[in-house]
Image 1 (tube, rainbow, N blue to C red):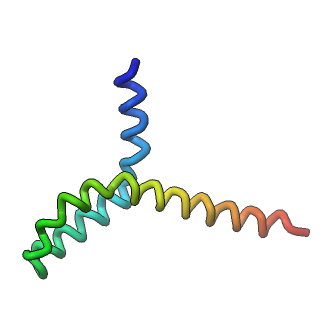
Image 2: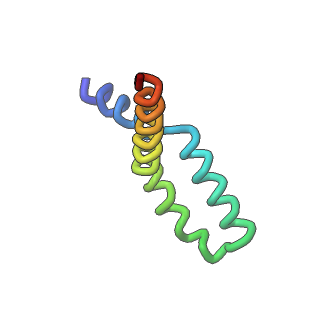
Length: 72
């Protein structure tokens, strides 16, 4: 039961847009600035917080548009 809850929490952190963005940044590091490649592990750790920030901003944006539509 605990493993299922853990897996659900992990799935919330795995936003495909954020993972793709992190992979693009790591690829750019590899080709253009190999000395910065040592920070790629840090970017992988940041996937979950970046996903949460992206999710909050998208929810906030959808709330603003729905509020504007409900105005008389």
